[in-house]
Amino acid sequence: MARKKHSIQQSLNDQDVAGNGLLHRRLFLQGGAAMALSGYAANDITEAAEGLPVEPWMRFPTTEGFAPYGSPSRFEKHVVRTGMQQQANAPPGLGSIRTPLHRLDGTITPNGLHFVRLHSGVPDIDPDKHRLLIHGLVDRPLIFTLDTLAKYPMESRIYFLECGGNSQTLYLRKPIQAGVQRIHGQICTSDWTGVRLSTLLDETGVKPNAKWIVAEGADASGMARSVPLSKIMDDAFIALYQNGERLRPENGYPMRLFLPGYQGNAQVKYLRRIKVTEGPTHTRDETSRYSIARHDGTTLQFFLVMEAKSVITQPAPELKLQGPGYYKISGLAWSGRGRGIVRKVEVSADGGKSWAEAAIQSQILPKATVRFHMPWRWDGRPAILQSRCTDDTGYVQWTRDAMIAERGHTGNYHTNCITSWAVNEKGEVSHVYA
Ligand SMILES: Nc1nc2c(c(=O)[nH]1)N[C@H]1C(S)=C(S)[C@@H](COP(=O)(O)O)O[C@H]1N2
Ligand SMILES: [Mo]
Image (cartoon, helix red, strand yellow):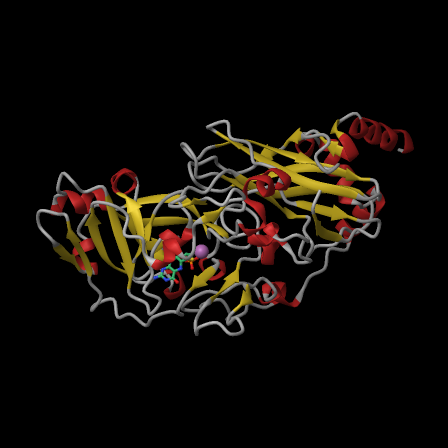
C-alpha cells in the first residue's frame, strides 16, 4: 500500500509543467490524482459503505418543492451580489452590485447574480406602454412595441457583458485589498435572445450618408451612446430575453441594446430610441466618461471593444487555502477582439516567471467567457498566481506594468491587464502587483 502511494506521488511530481508546482492540465483526468485528492483511506471507505445513513428525508416524503418561482438551496444564501448600492455624495441610483465570481463555476451567470450597473436606478416600465423609435437618417421612421418585435425572427447567442469600468482599481498606485468580486465582478455571460438591428433597419431603410447611430435609454440618467453603423449592421440586436426569461428589471427590462464584445456602458438598457446619424453624437457618457485617458495626454474615444482578459476566480482573496496539497486553479477568460475566440489561457504560480497552458472546460464560443482550470500542488510556501489570455487575433493579455506605461494611473477604463493573487504561508490570498 505504502509503495503504491509512493508511486502515485512520484507520477504526480513528474507532471510538473511550470515553476512552483503547476501540473499538467490533463492530470485531473488521470486516476492517480483522483485518489490523491479524495483524502479517505481504503478502510474508511469500507466502513462508510456499511454504515450509509438513512436520513429522515429518505423515510418520509416532503411536500416541498412546488414553488411558483424557484430559488437556490437554503445552504447557498451566501452566494449573493455585493457592492455599492449608493455611493456617498453620488446622485440617487448611481452604483453597482457585483457578481460573486468566486462562488460560481461554468460560464453562464444566473440572472439573479448578473452584475448590475445603474446610473439612475431601475425605472418601472410597463412593457405594454413601452415603445422603441427608430428615426434619423432613415427612409421610414418606425415605432416598435414588444408585440411587434415578437413577430420578427429572433436569435439566441451566448455573449459576455463586461462593464468598461470593471477592474479599474488596478490603475491605482497601491493594490486594493479586496476580493475578486469587488475587483472583477462586472463580467457576466448569458444566453441573450432578441431581434437583430439589421433586420429592423432593413425595414426603416438607411440613407447613404448614415454612418453612426445614437441609442437612448428611458431611465433618468439619460444614458445615450453612439455606435458605428457597421457594428449595428454586423451583430447588434435588441435583447428581450436573458437565459430564456424576460430581461430582469435591473438589466434593462423590457429591452436593451446588445453589442457583442463591446463595453457594457454602450449596451443601453431601457432602450427607447435609436437615431441614425452621420457621425458620433458626443453625448455626456462618451465624452466625460468611458473614454481612456493616456499617459501622453491623448484620449482614446469610442474605444468600444473589450480586449482579451482573464482572471483566476478560485483561489481568490475570499477563499483561503486549507494547507499544502493539491488544488484546482480555475477562472474565466474572454475577448471582444477579432472573432472573440479565446485561443489559449496560461497560468503561472511564480508571478509570471514560468507559464503553463490551462485546460478549457467549457465550450469556446465567440465573445463569451470560457472556463479554464489547472492542477496545482501547493507546497505551503508563498506563491503568486496569475493567468493570461491569448485571443484569435494573437493579442496577449498585457501586464499591469505595460498598461500603466501606456495609460498612466488615470486610465480608468478597459482594465484588461494580468491580475496577481499572492498566497502566503497561512494559505491566505491577497491582491498584489507583481
Ligand atoms: N439606460 C441605461 N443603460 C445602461 C446603464 C444605465 O445606467 N442606464 N448602465 C450601463 C453600464 S455602465 C453598464 S456596465 C451596463 C450594465 O448592464 P447590467 O446592469 O445589465 O449588468 O449597462 C449600461 N447601460
Ligand atoms: Mo459600465
